[in-house]
Length: 367
Image 1 (cartoon, rainbow, N blue to C red):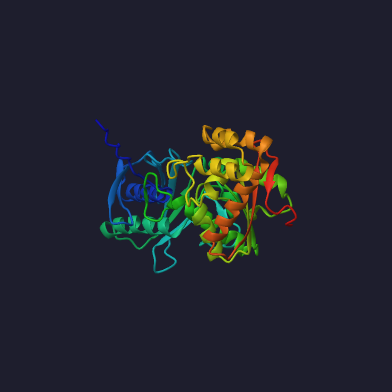
Image 2: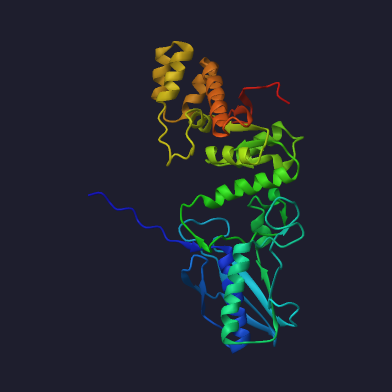
């Protein structure tokens, strides 16, 4: 009997966590009671209940609460992180009673190109709206002439941020407080694509016209070793999002890009596969075997390639006996990248050996 796939559990964003912590702290100030849970509304209209991790009264007009972020079955680096808000009743300075700032462990934007201007805390509009809505829900029950200052903080934010791409985006000193709707949907790729797009926005705002697109930290490290004079913003990890990345680069009017990848990803790119994850594209080596036969006229080697377990398994015999096949893969990947950019971007493809040396470069004289 075929088993039905288990339904993956959704979670909530750092922005939703901050909204819950802020609501809990204000609730403590108004009621004098520490809430065990708070109810918040996602920006989709859905409602959820979030447990309060810690809550304490600091002064008669100031309270601090935290919650633990739960990313559901799609955990990221912030899954399990403690997200907090310190809420102060203060003199109201504007018509809007709610003022939101970033505290310890929340990054500060230092580069142009993001939706948040330089000098401001890295708290995007979704979380700002959720925090404001959560505060206003309590103000409806407890009217006050006071202003409400919400300072979001992340106790371990500076350390966790070192495991993210924040520094590349120009977000320094901590995590970003993010979330479009407040909900983390398992297996959603929207957040990764958004990171690619924002990285390109930062690169464009820095005046760059050339990108180096890698698929992960290792290929990026090798690429940075190859081109140490390029600005950090030039290097963008696209993961498996081949088509989405080229489309985003074309939309932002970049002039050129270098694909700096390993052979396994290059083979998928060369087959014009828009998303190169194994779960999204069944990697048979039939195409690679056919290219081997066409390039070498050697049916025995072609059969060996067809029988390989992975493209990486096929790489060594090809490099030893048929480097022209690897060159063909690089050229095909380059051609497909140009296609995904609708011909707007000049593309170079570099395939790394697994020790970081360059196996193939379609344009070695390209500065």
